[in-house]
Image (cartoon, rainbow, N blue to C red; front, side, top):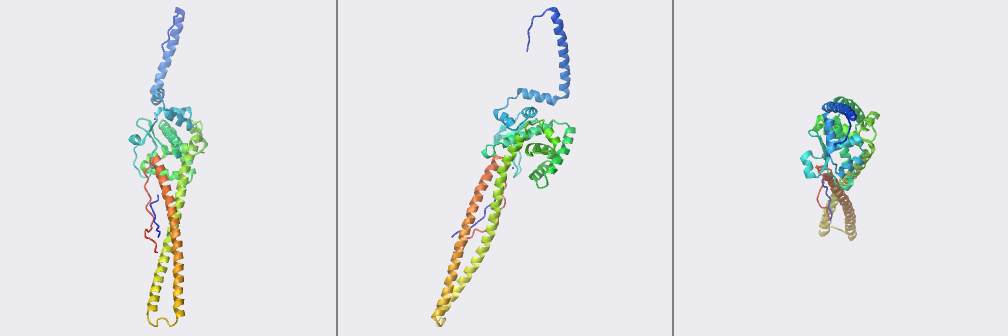
Length: 361
């Protein structure tokens, strides 16, 4: 006896010298010029405190090998690497990451954040080998947030026009449309900054003006976009297979349900006819000839044999269905593992309509 069922399918000098009097005058003159340079530098520093802070931070920051590797693999330029290091990026395990980048939204995962308050970058430690390279993309993404934070309002406004144009060119069916909508739902001011970071790290070909802008921060932006494409393919392939299995299971379930109902009707009819036959055969004179009795009996036996073949066929179909269901459950487990790897608290889809009833014998 076999049965079939469905399961839930399924978001950082001192210099000493001995000199004579004539030489002393020359040195004095140089020192006056030097003082003038220092005074000019102080004026520039006062006007550009952020860049001074960044430079002091980078001078004192010793990046971990992992951070250096991310910058290398992302193809960052000298300026991009400077901003990345100026944000003192740090890779954190889950329990520490949530202290800095806490985010509670089912189905959405946070792999990095750039904190506006102190200009820090925190990155989630992705350990799944299938997603190797994703941290690099996230690091580049957050570096661009740091870059955006340092642009003037005029630069941001000019870029917003270019970003919206390239975003629109992707078309309404592009997956980024839904993602940007989710960002906006959480924070309406995030649309342009997120477009800036996402287009720069995920979309391989952009308008010439945007490409020229991103060239400030990338020597080879394709290194980052290629990594993103590779990781995205992992999820796309799994999602496609899950959808195929889900659709096939739905279709098979509907067919099995119809076949089971048909089988149940046929079995009930046969049982009623067998009962009527037995009652007739038990009555004196119910059959007036042996040939009539044998003919009716054989007809019932033939129907019973055909129904048994139908039951065996139906149960074989149920076995095939359950094998596909097991495959779906294995893929769901794989998807759950990938979701955990990217810090997503996934919400399972509701179960399909189904039945756990045993098939009739």
